Length: 437
Image (cartoon, rainbow, N blue to C red; front, side):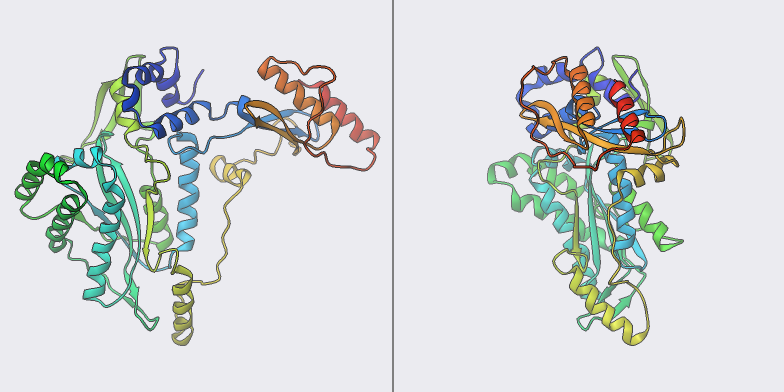
């Protein structure tokens, strides 16, 4: 039984995705097809797997490759947690403000139809905040911008989430702090920036089509577009971890999907107008259409860095700031802090609370024996620690594909480790490995 309800909605016996793809054809962006297919095959051992064997009871464990796709719920959750963990250590250990920049509801379809606007939309949001700080406080802040294209009802609602330092670096490397943002005053400025952005990037023909929407967005928002910047309380690292997860979160969490009966999907959402939690039921076709809109274009970065967090100047800013801190004996940032991404094992221990490399039967450790991967569309042995492990992998491949290896066929060219002559105990262990299918 499928445990991932989103995969069930897309790919169960009703074949909703295949029908949707056949019905809408060329209207579907190529990147959407690519990401959905990656999601379909995520965790399928026919696309590759690693082989582990318990050193005690010889239990065999086959761990399939993951797709690491931008649409896959399983992979995105792990990546979100990892990015948030790295973020709280990479940024300066100062107070930050979570700023939200929105647009008028009538302009959402303009950004949906002209997705080329989204990159400039992010750049303008960062420039808008940065210029305010440079003019008002004469400092260069650190800004991380995350683009959300979704609202609580999975509708297309592009808006920006900014993580901004409550302070900035002067030209001499000194750090200046502040804690006030007149976001009510900034609303009108943000409105002007968005409207000018659309007029600047669209062609004359395209501007004629949206002119009425632009005029309505200006007249209907006398105070400007909504800008929100709540103060953050508590531990700095806890703030950063929470905001980091929020910035990178997926369009819908699986826990919000309450029911799927084969034809309709019911999900929960929080109504921003009254703050109440409500449910909505839509057809599967409508649900899929809403969801795939939020798959970003190929190579499009939904998170970007500006100011002293810009990748080109970040290390230099750290050095300059660190030198100033030593003179005044203040430690805002650790310039030599070294981080690395956690391994799959470390992630599973943190997430599930138990070591995936410990056998649940005898509590001995699993040993890595090799792996198989796709080569020219065929599942082949990529690596094996010994000949017996290779034969075991080949048997697994035969079971998965139903294609037996022909006699006399050349052996795989993958490199085999050379070990000293096995002891009787090791030989017995390998025989047990070979006998287990």
